[in-house]
Image (tube, rainbow, N blue to C red; front, side, top):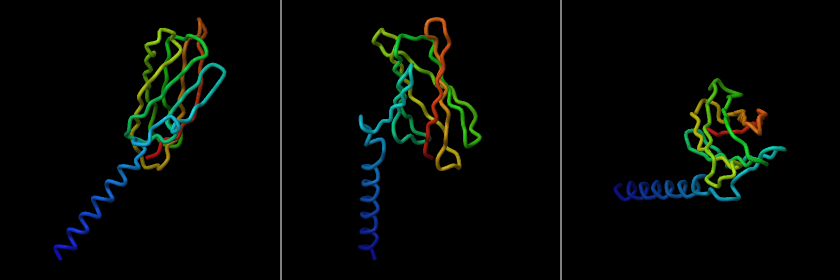
Length: 136
C-alpha cells in the first residue's frame, strides 16, 4: 500500500513538472508574438494572453508622437474598461512605447477586449482600435 502511494506521488510530481515546462510563460520568444499593423502604428502582443498574468504590449509609431493613452473595453463580458499606461522607450525618438497589462478572469473561457489607443501626432489627435482575445 505504501509503495502505491509513493508511486502515485511521484507520478503526480512528474505531471506537475511537465505542465510547468509547457506553460506559455516558458515558451515566450519572438515567434510567439502577433503583430497588428495600421498606417500609423504597429502593435505587438503575445499570441497567447491569459487572464491574471502580465503580458507585454509594444507600440511602434511611423513617426514621433506624444500623449499616448490606451484602454481595454470589454466586449463579450461585463468587465468594464481598464486603463493601460504606456511609457516611451529610452531611445529618444518617441516612436516606441511599451506596457505590461493584466486583466482579471471571468466565467467566459475566452474574453474579447477592444484596445483603444489614442495619441497626438503633431497637434492632431489620432486613434487606433484593435480587438484582442484573452484566455481565462
